[in-house]
Length: 246
Image (tube, rainbow, N blue to C red; front, side):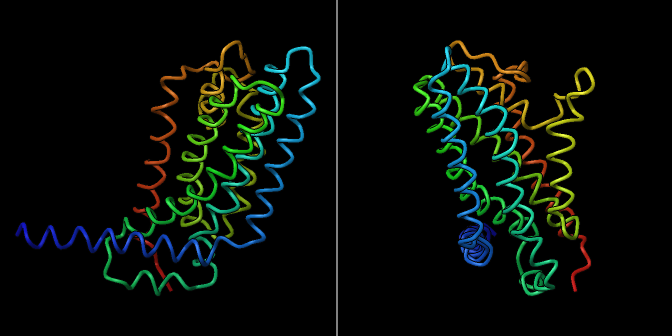
């Protein structure tokens, strides 16, 4: 029994890595990379303009919180996260992976790894650079951490959406624009149910930084954001295991 289990683990790991590479090759296109890079470059440009503010640290943090964590991060993750499996569903190609003798959790896990591996550096590095060009090096590390954990949480949500809905990018876009950036702040306390507010809480760990919407505990954010990613993976696995694949 132990020999069979020890043999199965390397095979599962190899399958996970192979699927991750397959998804990266098929879904991470040059157009998507350039699009995300362009959004990141705009953040750096806004950081450069913040350099002339009376308080560059606050100005840079506001750019990172409003544009970086509120727009760049969710849109970049949405673009890749919903398509990494969602395109296979829409093109009726998912059946070829579904028929493989693999545990149902492997494909959603590979999709999350592939998406996060691309989105995290393409968003976290420009947001850290935004703080640096603004002359606020103290903000850079917090911006990097906020973007990285925020990307992880959004990845879990959007990969699950890509499996659950056809053309999930439109549902995700409505979620980002209407809920994450508007409706959640219309009622007292509802913003705690947004990824962006928890990410802003991590940004506020920078010395002397106070951004709107970052009132939650940073320590809790280090737990909540990975938990959202895990929940997304579990939902995606459940949905994938019960989907009618044709």
